[in-house]
Length: 159
Image (cartoon, rainbow, N blue to C red; front, side, top):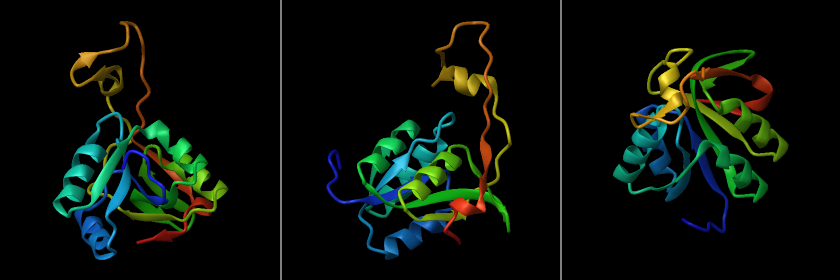
């Protein structure tokens, strides 16, 4: 799907495996999948689960989501959540900006349980290095949040 013409689903985070079974029942044949830096676990697990169900993933860098919204290529957003309450949800990092963009573009945001709970913060080397190679110069510090709070006003449904 190098140049999609119709809007498709956008998936963010490491969703529980049953999400992909439910997606297959909807006859969805292609989706955008965010990579999920710094660990890339979302890309690894998500692509594997989608391909297993013959759904074509188009992997995007996390910061590409804004362009997809701008070009009206997103019809629905699905995000992994760790915990919810009546005020909102704790989701994988990167979810808040998707909620804001989706609200601005009047696109539903649906939450699905995460595959597993993760730590609040990652290790600096997860951001300063890529596949074992250090990219940042020595002396650089890193702030690596792995989850963030998404207020309920940005959430359409919780599954």
